[in-house]
Length: 219
Image 1 (cartoon, rainbow, N blue to C red):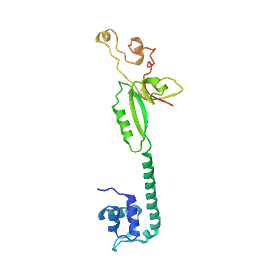
Image 2 (cartoon, helix red, strand yellow):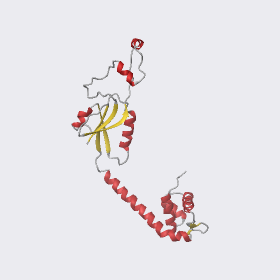
Image 3 (cartoon, rainbow, N blue to C red):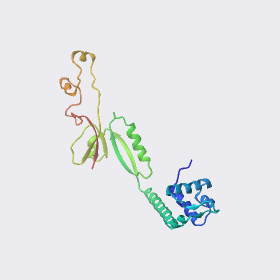
Image 4 (cartoon, helix red, strand yellow):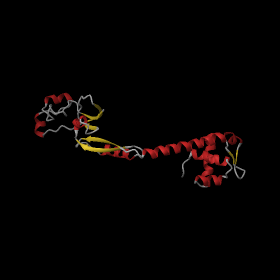
């Protein structure tokens, strides 16, 4: 079933006001006669008054239809001009080369949801953007302008970088059965202070007491 097209309803109305029969108006708009009739009726239901006299053949405008006919013509003509102008702009935009954004992602990151959204955005008409992906380039590549965006597990204060937290990063702590038999399992974060944890070295730029997933990009 075709959906209600308000703009097309006004165009059918204007063609009837210009002396076309409903059949000729439908043909000119590339639709069938029953659909054209439904469009007029739907528009009348929306407005709350009759636009045409349905009994005479060919159809004639009602008194109220005659009153608003000049404004309807202006409305339809303005919409046509707007669509033509947008179409021209769209044609010119296609001549502009797309901008490529270089993104670095961690190797162990589940990339599927992110890649799906970025690819869909890239395919959008008029997006003007393509994406290039690399693995674990880090903040050094950002500062040296080798990448534009870097997703990582750490933050570094640099005047040329802007960081945003986009998610929390969680990972399981593993222990052997022997260790758990000798030591009680931690129940809260403070309990971890009593255990030796094998994590990254504190000298590593990726070390953080609060692990966060950071989106960094150069400015």
